[in-house]
Image (cartoon, rainbow, N blue to C red):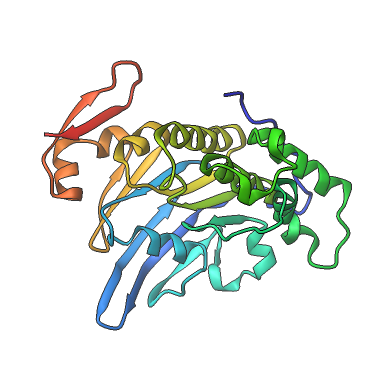
Length: 273
């Protein structure tokens, strides 16, 4: 896969990349705590995986970062500001969110979907400028979606569709992407393709990514850092080498796992013992 091409950045983009700061962040619903109070920093410019079993709090945490849910306790800061102080379009210029289930796009061509990523910059009545067009074309090139740019989104394969939605986020030109299980419905080949693209985009552009994943080996292969949750609590955090160990995996999944070095790459690989 070729490396993504640099995109022009609007003058209104923040001069420095920003990260998240969680300050006693918690979330609960009647009768159940989904996320215990959590305090930590998520640095910009890195691919960070959120892993853990179903119901561990991964998607809840991501939705709190994306302002899709309001915290029951504590606060989240992005950059030096509380999330609540950001306007909708202003926040969308910095942070892009891809939900676990993308909505249908009846009658929408891939190029038209990608162009929607420019909405935070020109608004509903703004003129679609040459700069907007440059971002759309650059996003299509970077995500290798140009060959099917004129095809309907809903006619694409699963892997192609995920790349089209990622292209929309790239056109949005954020400093951070929040991705909720972007490979859950894909076969292994497309999982590798999509996560390889995400990693390349991050490393080429200093783009921060927080991604919810189920597969610990995919997290180890494509992510710079892993944060593991269990029953709404953070139980492990560190590099793949620090988290993908037999004791950590036992704490995360409650399962004995053997860890070995991948024969062709540097990251560790875990298999059930």
